[in-house]
Amino acid sequence: MENLEEKIAGASSLEDLEKVRIEIFGKKGALAAEFAKLKDVPGPEKKAFAEGLNRRKAQLQALFDARKETLAAEALERTMRSEALDVSLYSGLGEKGALHPVRETMDRIIDYFVALNFAVESGPMVEDDFHNFEALNLPKHHPARDMQDTFYFADGTLLRTHTSPVQIRTMLRQKPPIRMIAPGAVFRRDYDLTHTPMFHQVEGLVVEEGDKVSFANLKWILTDFLHEMFGEVEVRFRPSFFPFTEPSAEVDISCIFCGGEGCRVCSRTGWLEVLGCGVVDPNVFKAVGYEGVSGYAFGLGVERFAMLLHRIPDLRSLFEGDIRLLEQFR
Ligand code: DAH
Image (cartoon, rainbow, N blue to C red):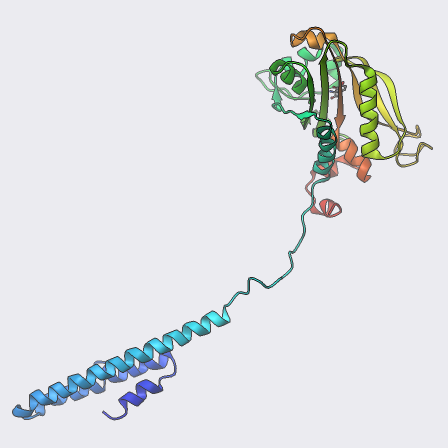
């Protein structure tokens, strides 16, 4: 029964202490051996012997508990130290993200028009014939419908082929004056170097009471817009045809690659076509029940702008999700 106190005090780890516990308090331990002697103690001394033993046992238990607490606290302290995480330590932010070039170009376009007080409108991508064609002066069997290879659903609805239906929805919902753009995804059955089945357009529409809006206003704003996007380029309005505008024009800028000299990108013409526009056709106003108003409209392809601004040779690469493409736009 010697040195039991020392044994407890000498245990240097919880595992050590557990061994000591078995040695002292276990079934075959030191205390059990002492208690076994009780039966040989003469009657009159039994009580004192047992009391002494119980006192000793209680003292050892108290020592043991205290030591256990100390060792457990030390162990916890060690774990906390070794597993400590310094959250204030800078470890680098890893890869930095980037806006997709289409998003970035779209944002630039939107910013320009929002600064001029245009509202940003949107409409559904699954459209009906009325909004996508009919109300835009493209009646059934109109040959211009062939220009747009449309994805149709069985019920006659379709994936919008342009953002122009948002013009119609906005005019049906609001009264003039209207000054809006409609950015969004559009869908056509096309797939080659410069066409993907899904791409993005920004539509623009301005409508005022009376004859306040003219082709001159349209020409000014688009020229200013193109200068903002492409810098000091020549801008040219070329007569064209769209069912929803009359007169209509396609707008070219002098080639930003060769400065108008003629190169492969501009097919040696010195010009790059960048958007379509015109004065809103009276039939469109009729379809939405507008009278005595004037307006202009325009539409552009965002990918086309992104390709020119970033010199991206293959439009399809914008939608393949290859991280190596995005990494170039950080
Ligand atoms: N909707 C035409 C297209 O998808 C683009 C367009 C041209 C829109 C002329 C217009 C416009 O509003 O006036 O090709």
